[in-house]
Image (cartoon, rainbow, N blue to C red):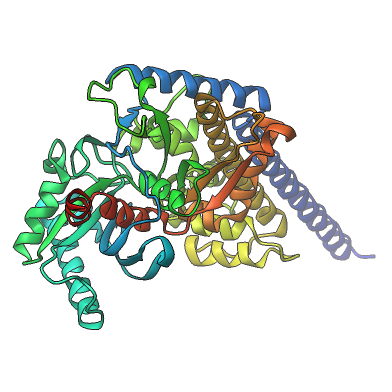
Length: 500
C-alpha cells in the first residue's frame, strides 16, 4: 500500500473516531441536561408536597383565622365579611328579576322569572360579555358605563320578547360583585380592593352599587339594585333554593372564595340587633388566607412579587384558575433556561407572563392519547414549540399534575377548615347532610382537579364522616342566586307581605 493510501486510511479512521467522540459528547451533554431537568422537576415536586398531616395543619390554621376574623375587623387575613344576608331563599319567591354577575374578566346578565312554591324558576335567559383589558385598569366610570350599556341592551331585547313585568313595577336587580367589599347594608358596600387582575384606583373605597346606579342613570335604565352579593353568597343562595342542606359554597374559577351560614351569636364583631333567623351568611374572602404551613416554591414567590397585589391573595395564587397555568409556565421557563428542556434556544413565547392559561393546562393534563398529541398541539400553538419528544411531553404532563394536585388538595384543606368551624366535620346522630354548593370554571371543567379535591376531602374526613358530605355543582349559581336574593329583598315583595 502506498504512503498516500496509508495516510488517507489514517485520516479516515481519525474522522470516524472524531465523529464517534462528538456523538458521545453530545449524548453526555444531552444526558447531563436531562439529569438537570429531572433534578428541577423533583425539587419542585418535593416543595409542592401536601401530605395529610400538613393539610390538617392548614385546615386548623383556617379555622383559627376564621375565629379571629369574626372577632374583630382586621383581626385576621380573612376578612370574614358580614353579608347582611340573614334569610336565604325559601322557594316562595315570585316575579321577574334581573341579575348582573361580575366575577372576573367576564360578566353575565340574567333575567329570571320565579313562579313561587309550585312554579320554581319558570324561565331564565342570559347574555355574556368580556371586559376589555384596557377597562380593567382604566376609570370607574368607563368600567361601569360599559357594563350598564350591555345590561341596557339585554333589557331591551328581553322585554320585547317577554311582557311579564307587572305594570307600575320598577325592575329590580341582584348585583353579584365578586371582589372584596365592606358591605354596609343588603344593597350597598364599599370596595376594599381589586383582585383577579383589576386595578382601578378610583373605585377603591367607593360604594359599588352607587357607581352602578349612576351608570344605569347615564344609560337611561330604570332599575333598582335590591341586593349586592358576592358570587359565593349568590352560589350559596342558589344552592339553598333547591336544597335546604346547602350550608357552604365554594367558588373555584378565575379566583376562589368561600361563604357559609354562621350562627349570629358566634360573630363577636356583629353589633346590630340579632336577625330573626339567628343566622348570618359570612363572606370569608378566603383567597387572602395564608399560613406558614402552605407549601410555597420559588415560582410562587416570584409570581407574587411580580403580581398586581404582592403579598395578598396567597391562597388564591396557589389554588385558582388565574394562576395555575402561570405557575406551570414559570417552571417550564426555568427548565428551558437552565437545562435546555426545549433545545438550545429558549422559546420566546415562554417568556410572556400568563401566555399559558389554565384551560390549556387542563387540556394538556387530561391528554390520554398514547403519543400525547394534545400536548404536542398545545405546545405548538401556544408556545410555538415543535418537534418535542414523547419523553419531554410526559414531563410537561407530570408538571401539570404536580401544580393541579397541590392546588386541589389545598382547596380541600380549606373546606375541611370551614367544616370544622361549623361543627360539620364529624357525623352526628341525626344523620344531617351537609351539601357544599360548588361553582366556577376550574371546578366545572378541570376534571382532574375536581376529582382530586373531592377525594382529598374524603381522605381528610375519613370514610364515616365523609358519608354525610356532598358536593353539588351549582351551575351559574352565583347569577341565579343574585336574582333570588333580589327577590327576597324586593320592595314589591316587602310591600306585598307588609300589606297582607
